[in-house]
Amino acid sequence: RDFRKRRKKWFSRTSETALVLVVLNTFSDTFSQGLSVPLDQVASLFAILPIFYASSVIAMLAVSRAVTSSASQRVAATFTATQKTLAFGLPLMQTVFGGTASMGAITAPLLIYHPMQMVAGALMQP
Image (cartoon, rainbow, N blue to C red):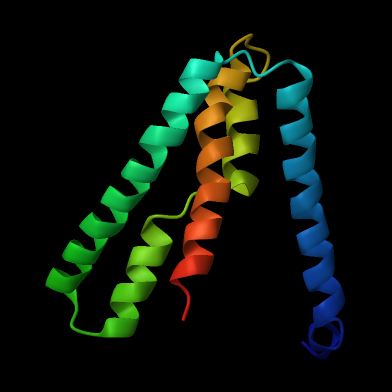
């Protein structure tokens, strides 16, 4: 236990670095094979995904209001329920769909959604 406490910062940095490397590797693989998504479809994703995100936030706020009266629990539930991560999503997609010619099309929504939700989350912070 003391060993872990003394090296907490090192373990944290190692974990973060490994996570960044996994995402970078999968991201690079996706784009090295070509995105294979027409520009009009990418534009559609940029139009549809913010609406989807806003709808999911509003829906989760409504559900959390029905379940709890605690403001902090509602915020936590809403934030965690609407977040998707590249760190988990891309490697999972690579494992399930790896080697398919349409990998770019499969990952495009997540590649757009993840940065969008990061910006939205940063804007929602007090």
